[in-house]
Amino acid sequence: MCSVAAGSGGNANQSVDLPVGGQVVVTVTCDIASSATLSFFNTATITAPMNISDPVGVNNSATDVDTIAAPATTGHPVFERLFRVQMNTLEQLIIFVPAILLFARYVHPLVAAALGLVFILGRWLYFRAYVRDPKRRGTGFLIAVIPNSLLLLGGLIGALITLIRYPGLY
Image (tube, helix red, strand yellow):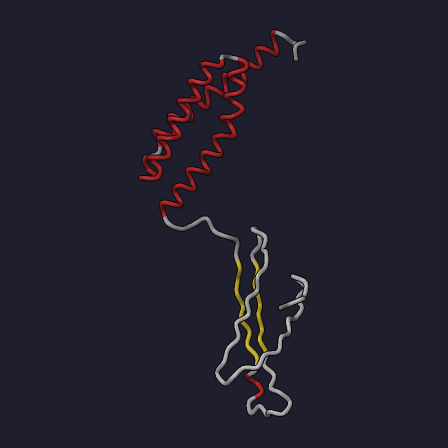
């Protein structure tokens, strides 16, 4: 066990008795920030007991260097396509959620709901096409982007008209 504080660069010293040809495995466990890329240096040094003469004293140390990188989001092609669909959907939701709320408030809630359903249908078609073949995602994207744009423009125009008509209301 090592009682040295993490990141201190301190040494962990543990005496062990090994038979000829024996080995020791040391496991180090620590938390690493997801944004970190670092190198982990591990040096093991052997010192013979006082009553034993070491005929070759220059080979009693070895260093291992391991580079630790943040987790990658690459892998199997299907995983990568699913991941991209998820990220693209999150990007679209940043527009969709406020747009549908504005449209429902300032234009018409049932029309907002209908456009919202068309958006969801488009995202579903986009998902299915992108996972099969990314080159064929265009139709689903178009079916989703049109209601998203209408919701945004309609909601903003409706809010603006309300502000102009009723200046003291807000």
